[in-house]
Image (cartoon, rainbow, N blue to C red; front, side, top):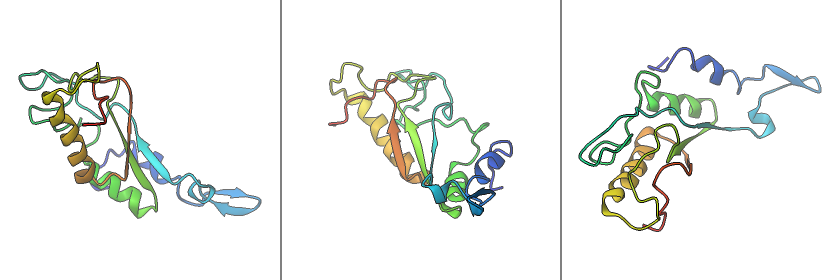
Length: 143
């Protein structure tokens, strides 16, 4: 539904339903406190973008999504919300560890665009939370 990957959707839409019994009572994982779903690594389209050759941010700093695997982030986060779940997103990922930013935690002008691009995308796609992995160069959270 909604342009989502039909192979991934059934795995995630069954958990909020009360398909399992706990002490004879129909119970969902959310009933037990597991109401947040998170999209970890492998959502990005690894490549070489712009003059700085960032690995998953375009030349303007926006993250580049692998639309073959995730054709519609907005539909995905909307579906999570329809199911009463919150949806989190992981950045600074490992699979195509980005050079956008400065690994030595020094402020670097070129990296600012990627921080801004990630925040803009977080809101644009409707995610509720973000977790930053430690694999990429975006480690200066004082910007």
